[in-house]
Figure 1 (cartoon, one colour):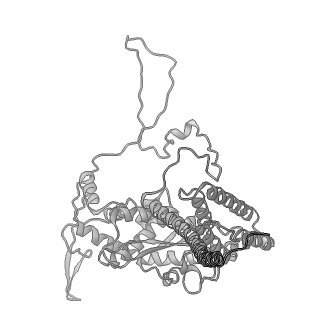
Figure 2 (cartoon, helix red, strand yellow):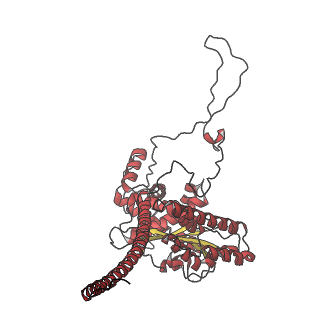
Length: 456
């Protein structure tokens, strides 16, 4: 038999057991607290990582907008295969033969420098294009006869007299509009060009008055142009920022371009509200509008969303420098899937394929676990607008992209970088009329622009 414990030993062991039970309870509570705290911290870390990833992507977007994209030396990671370049021919590096010849010069050679008469003569032709510098300006002296009518008892003139004794003719006024609108020159540059080339001095105030008069003169043409574009079965709409220097609030420029004529009408210095869409297309436009996914266009009944913007979003994400390698591979795969859907829609433009394409886009837009937050946002937007991306199935002639409007705005964006905007809302309206008419005339008559502009 074992040794019996004394009362003192039993008491000590009971005290030790009570202490162990108490310490176990305390340690168990402490361990449970640490486990809960550890779990909460891990969840917070995951949320913080997702937040950092989203902020990095937003920072990358801002960096691209401000500084542009960096050119890559190696395109092996490009998710879209590069297009094959068509080699240029030798003739493409040469100037084309002029259609109109203003003068012909004959260069003969009857004898050699040694005095011997030459034989077996051939004629070799080349052309020389040049301009007269400086150009001699035209100055017309007008002698206006003034006479009195005894019957009507009033003085008559052979033609209406201008306010000044020396005026600028219609050609130079239209040329000033061309330099300002098409060439995007500043008033100071226009002054320098006219003085150096034509020996004509003109003040900046006079240039401003010429632009105002010409915009007033072209207003009827502007309204007719707007009605013409509205009559087309589909139009492109887009907008960009534009600054009014006397107004601290944000303002924007809008454009409506025709799908058939490729001509454009502008609104400049307006708000970014959807009321400007109605100003361009009218209240009862029955055609189809091709736009990006800006909120001002979302209530339009006949609406085709731009595939180029959609593909661009996924492409930029697939080449982002803020994602890890695993996420980049996933984004590239998703971008390639979307490119395949786009190619199939482009090559099979029939309503019979609507259900199939709709299901493919719906399956594609399902958000998977742990995918980048930005891609999830793109897919959510796509899922809400599947029908608007498939409007193009109604007619093969409906453009799938809004590139026409973006190309029309490009000229204005470059002018904005040079001039920083318009001084007032009135000068912005003048610019809208002049830009609409002159750019449309240049689109309509690319080789005879000046000749047609002088007729307007």
